[in-house]
Length: 496
Ligand code: BGC
Image (tube, rainbow, N blue to C red; front, side, top):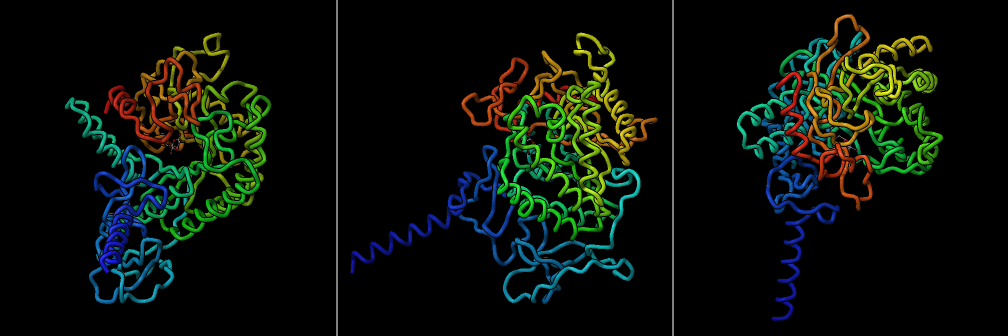
């Protein structure tokens, strides 16, 4: 009797401990603190040491689960279900999404896009939005809540009051949301689309959200720092299609009443222009990069509210005459392969540091005879070349999140966590008069998120992240790098 009591007490304790520390079974540690960043059906999630962790002892509150996601709970006795996702059932009250408490709620209905007229002011997934002209123009830019959270935490670590104030301003600017793993896509895509829609409906006007599609098989084939979860093989290509692109497509097809921009697979096609012969990993990846682009352009390129920009590296990658000529061939082939889907244009300088203008530089030994030694001259040249090659839509976005100041680099191709970094021009549509093909300056790479680890023993260590002008010690790509953030803020040009 006594023994069995003790045994069941131990079992009960074990069960309690595992309930309290539920996330380890999902492969994530438990949090030490209790700051909730995200909630899903598993429970409340925090971010500690740049990693997801489960908040101990707080499995999601079944009754009123949506508050943790920043939405009120519905108050109506029997609210209509407008929409169902992994979090639960959603209703609409006071022009805002609300979570329907579990237990006794009505059966889910499929959300039906309203046809516009007679909507009675309710928040619905409204009528089809269609881009016309510059996809960045005429909208509010959505603020990425994950980045705002990162900035708020970073600000708390700064003691200098002037730097603190400047750093806080970083949370007021929009930047892109990277869908860099299947899990992050599942976590962030729909949640942000839903928030942007709620903002659009409550404030009026249109709210633009920018996502980075970034999970190619064999990703980052010429470098190591950002190698991804999918490898260059047929099985992983299938996963990319069915678990990643198709799922994104499903969400995009649902949220049709808001403008969306997609930045497509940074550092992929540029590698096909310059690195097939010298880098076996790029040769192995080529067919997957091509297949993936054809697949996603066909799917996303027919959606009227979605505009896509293909990544073109930056001035010190494809700027040389022969590289630009090679690029014109590769990009026109890729765009044709995605027909009837269309792309709006090209994005340059993603996660790079090349200044917009650098009048000190010209073609010569210092630039290794690159005739396009800054982003402005690069886009001017690319615009001509791409049009000559018969590409129909030739428009550009330039990533200015970290190119405000010429960084300390021994070679212009240095790309990892550069010292001397400074925030560049703020996100804006049509920022340069006379360059009507420049759709926007936008912050694609979030300042403060590392480019790659400086730990030589790490699997994704890339020598560039150990170079003399790379700031060290640096965490893994994508993880928070406080010192780099602070320097970028301090050196902002224009100042914050
Ligand atoms: C990393 C991604 C990250 C992105 C934004 C890339 O270099 O590989 O994991 O999401 O940067 O910081």
